[in-house]
Length: 183
Image 1: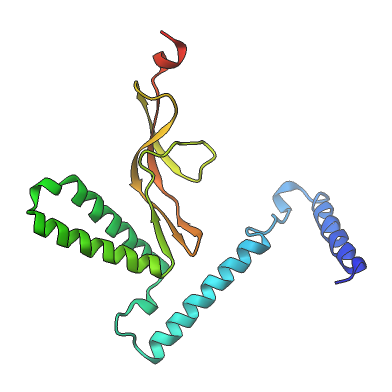
Image 2 (image 1 turned 90 degrees about the vertical axis):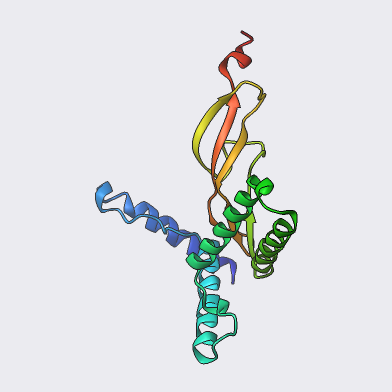
């Protein structure tokens, strides 16, 4: 691409943006919802889904996972995470041999998802920063804290090939008001 064609492209975008100012706000065309990088990522994911769907309609896969859509994978990932969490909370209720076997099954399921590019991230105990990409459902004052910390993950963050496809939901603990003011 030559210098003049890039310059003309930029000039066209500036003119289009300024041209919108001639119209009342309710008639202005909003900027695109996705930038070019995001649009390219969405296109690549949709191409992967089309390819997987075409492969399963032509030759059914033995495990059936090829045609799974994103919501099915998210449900499976979140379900595995919740089962593992519940198992860890009730570990004393099961015989040791059964506990090991169930943990092995869960770990195998999570590893299969990870091998397919799906990563499940829990946030319990992580330091919290307001700029993080997490949905905070509640803040709790905790007397022993010196900074904001994630107390509980209610829904994990899920990433597919490095891109977040599910935002985590958390409860954040913050220092009690008396501790920060020295009273």
